[in-house]
Image (cartoon, rainbow, N blue to C red):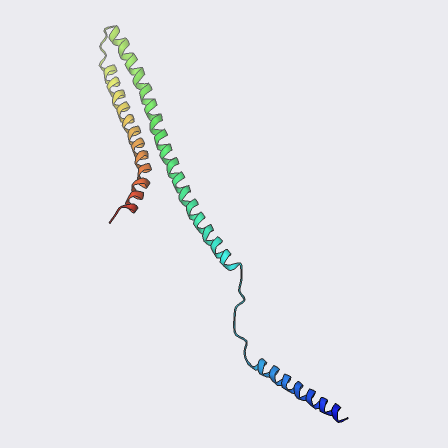
Length: 151
């Protein structure tokens, strides 16, 4: 039985060493390593892309709204021009009729002159609206050239 006792002692010593190693391992704190999230980098890239797209969308909406406002201004100027031109046409027709009958009506001449002045004013407003639209379209192009200019 000496052999059995010897084996028991060896097994007991081995179990004791295992128990000590386990205790030592428990006593050492585990390093605080956060679990690596494999999705985090892709999520961050997508979040940045979404933010960039939102900014671009907001800029495009602002451009669209500005274009609509310019278009409304141009339309208003055009409608005003058409109305004044129609008035001018009627007044000139009345003036021609009066002159054909060789009747001098100062009030009619005055109305014709006033209608012509209004037509010129309306034409000027339409021209200003058109020039403003052209300038607004050129500003981004000029700004783009400035960013590439040497200096």
